[in-house]
Structures are given as C-alpha cells and as structure tokens.
Image 1 (cartoon, rainbow, N blue to C red):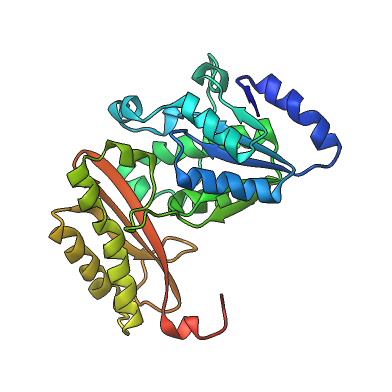
Image 2 (cartoon, rainbow, N blue to C red):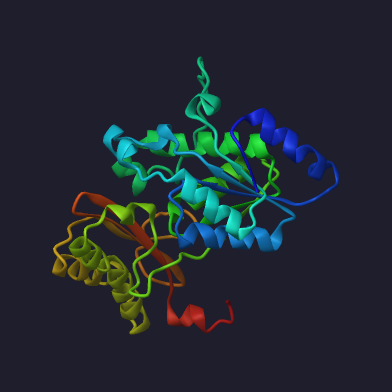
Length: 290
C-alpha cells in the first residue's frame, strides 16, 4: 500500500490503471477505523482492481468546533489496518490540500438533506458532506464508491447527488456492522465510558422494538415509535429524534405498509450516536422481494 497526500500524486498513481480499464473503488472515510470501515474495504477489494481509501476529517461538515477537535484520530493505526486489508492507496490529504486559500464553492443537495440530521445539525453539515464527496469523486474518479448503511441519510444524499449531477460512479451502500450486543460500530463509540457503552445498546434495542411491533401487526407509526422511545428512556436516554420514514424520500409515513426506515439519534453522555434499521411489514416480506 502507498500513502499519498496530494491530489496530483493520487491522480498520477491512478492514470495507468484507468487507461488499462481497471475498476477503481473508493472508500471515503474520516479515519479512526473500526470493523465497519474494514468491511467496506473488504467489499471494495473483492469487487475492484484498485482500491483507494481516503482519510480526511472534513472540517466543513462539523457544526460544532469542539466536536471536530474531539474527533478520534489515529492515522498510523489506520494505515496499518488498511494495508492488512490489501488497500492499494491511502489518500490522506491535509485540509489545505482539499480547501486551498480562496476556496469558495459549495455543492448543495436539497430536499433529503433537510429533515433528521439536517434539522438537528444544520444545512451546512450536508453541504460539507456533498462538497467534499464531490471533490473526492473528481480527484479519484472511482467506478464504485462504498458507503455504510449506518449513515442512512448520508447514503441517500450521496445517491441523490450522483443522480442529479450525472456523476459516473456507482454508489454501493453496505450493511451496518454491529457489536455482538447490537451496538452499531462508530468511531464516536471510543468516547463512551463503560457505563455509557452499556446504555448505548438501547439504540439497537429500540430499533428492534419497532421491528418486533411491526412483525406483530402494528401499522401505526406513532405506536411503533412509542415502543422505541420507551426502550430509550428506560436507559435514561432522551433522543434527538426517533422517526419512521420512507426509505426513498425520508418523508414521514402515516402507515407502516411495505418498507419503512426507522432512524434514531441520541446523546449518550456527551456522545451523539445515530442508528437505523430498514423494516419490512410481513405482507411485504411475503411478496417475494429479498
């Protein structure tokens, strides 16, 4: 594996494989790798001839400067893990390389960026995401880009970005990786104390409570949501939101019929966590769709 930190260098490294028609995969990350990141890298390694992992803690998507400062960083460990997977290039630019003096362009997606995380973190959060992802796609020119389902809204936003701007890249959204007790893997989990780590498992239990309710015949989103909120509050967690929405538009559903996306955001101590689960009603499960 080769680590590069300039745009010119990564473009030069990819020029020959691109001319040869080799498939280039990109895994965009902010580092602090965990098993979820590694699963994306393995999927990229299995599907692509050349695998690029970007490691860039993007300052423009943080609405709280303290959150940016506290974001976990361990670039040496990250590089070692990526090399073990068989990544070809680790692209780790400095902020000044990505946002040089005079940088004045923002790529903004409407609609799906407004609810949920957009409402709680501000529109600038997703503007930061879509701008840096657009830059990474232009810099690397991947055939396939790999994202995790844990950031479900972000994945939907990226798909909309690619569709609306006719970007020649396929977006592969890969399943959430969880600990044995259900906690979704996140770099932010490192900030949890042992007690908070135990309490945080309530997020996955809350999603499971919604899924169990739907499996038992519940079709009222408010009633299913109440099950999730009760699970969270039993762990002394007050959520930022618990929502059941369309998996395509993020619009709230008035009845659970077919596929719905259940999403949760909550603070456990000082750490803000998100999680989600795609839920299918039994009738939808029986119609032969996977």
